[in-house]
Length: 176
Image (cartoon, rainbow, N blue to C red; front, side, top):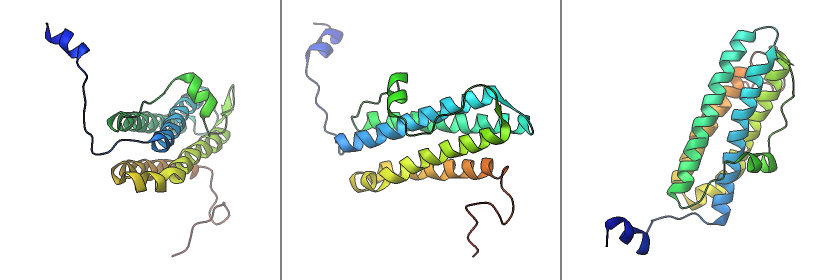
């Protein structure tokens, strides 16, 4: 019997130290969906923004898209590492996203900033909502959430700063 044939017929058993349960997998699946939708919305904005500071926002959107794609890949690979099966299909994204819809057609840069920042914060909200359950089950995966949150909230702040007015924008900065 060839090695390839034997490999297909023998039952393989592994003994991971941690294996995702249904809730854990569902939490990561939601984060994956939201990250994939953020990348798609970023591209939609990238192609269709017009107006003041077009070039700066166009380049900023590339950073957001790259982060969303990279983090989506990290989440999907983490899912596989803990024996969960990720679903990154367009049908799943459309059915399950928790992000607000991005406008169609040409979008003024300021409106695009507001929309993409809302979507970044929606993804961050998903990561924060699932964090405690993930951390209780597997602190290693929670570390991935920390990295995602740190970068997404930084990108939201950097992007949103374009629209803020000192001392009058909500939310106001906490004075230390």
